[in-house]
Amino acid sequence: PLVLGIETSCDETGVGIVRGTTVLANVISSSMAEHARFGGVVPEVAARAHLEALGPTLQTALERAGVGFDDLDALAVTAGPGLSGALMVGVGAAKGLATATGLPLYGVNHLVGHVAADILHDEGVEGRDVEYPTIALLVSGGHTSLLLVRDLIDDVELLGETIDDAAGEAFDKVARLLGLPYPGGPEIDRVAREGDPTAIRFPRGLTKPSDLARHRYDFSFSGVKTAVARWVEQRADSGETVPVADVAASFREAVVDVLLGKAVAACRDLGVPRLLLGGGVVANARVREVAAHRCADAGIALRIPPLSLCTDNGAMIAAVGARLVSAGRPPSRLDFGADSSLPVTEAQVAAH
Ligand code: ATP
Ligand code: MG
Ligand code: FE
Image (cartoon, rainbow, N blue to C red; front, side, top):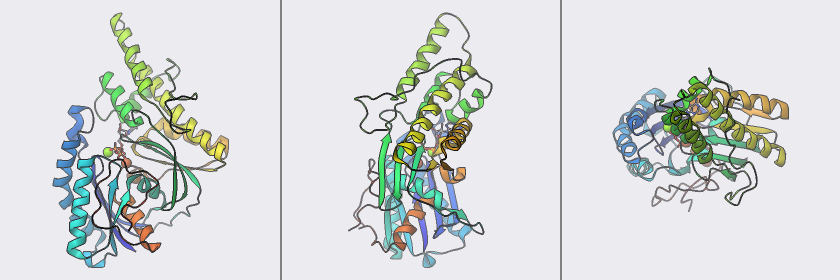
């Protein structure tokens, strides 16, 4: 099926068009730069940016794919989780399009979209055979989730998530206190290359059993962030220069150690020999290195989609829609809303 997907859950306005698992267009407009002076995504600013970008992004996607609304079989839109105001722009626009064109509309789960990125491939490129079950580690500015996927649209289980900051958010906050610009992830990654990752032993959050955890593999990154802040403060107070590269490398090591430690442990504990990575933090050089090493050691097949599909985009949302259409699922009722905390067990909202 030919499906158009709309994504507006955070700061990327994405429109993607897929035929089954083949990407025909994947156009993204990001408001990231507008959030730079605030050091993080500002919901109101993101929502307004979606409103302005969605029309042109939609038009460009249709042009690039060389299709019109008449050619489409269905529409899909991110219904949640994400920022309420941002989600509402996409959901509102999608309902308008569905009503005007008569196309069926599927309200889909953003996290399931990140998992679906794995089944996508460009035109003329052989698709990969996706095997389930797989463990999926999704890490970005807004989420840090560990999932057990037995079936993309019918069986996704939450194994763990962050109980405070998302990993990308922690990168952004630590970068800020080191005087590095936003977004902090790429900056810390760059600076860390010159540093010693063993210089400072920062805490690994929630690696021992804790009452704070609700799931077996929950994450916590506010502790490491606070530890970095204290360490830097003490240095500055005593008049010593802060070894920014060592701090960045040691912080990055602490975060990556926990992320891959838990993901690989879940693979082992549950006997799942596959690990899929997704989300913007997958751009991190150390995440990739450690993932490659530890997966090779443990005999786990590692899958990392191209970065353009790891960060938020419309094609991954369209891919979930296409799977729902192929499975013969009825479209969502048009009275669904944006659900900022949609559970990952719900691949589709308002499914009659
Ligand atoms: P969502 O949470 O809905 O997926 P988002 O916009 O917060 O959306 P992305 O756009 O996927 O997430 O990723 C942005 C985040 O990834 C930022 O927090 C950024 O600092 C982080 N990031 C990007 N590159 C790197 C890197 N090389 N190392 C670590 N973090 C990175
Ligand atoms: Mg983003
Ligand atoms: Fe995302």
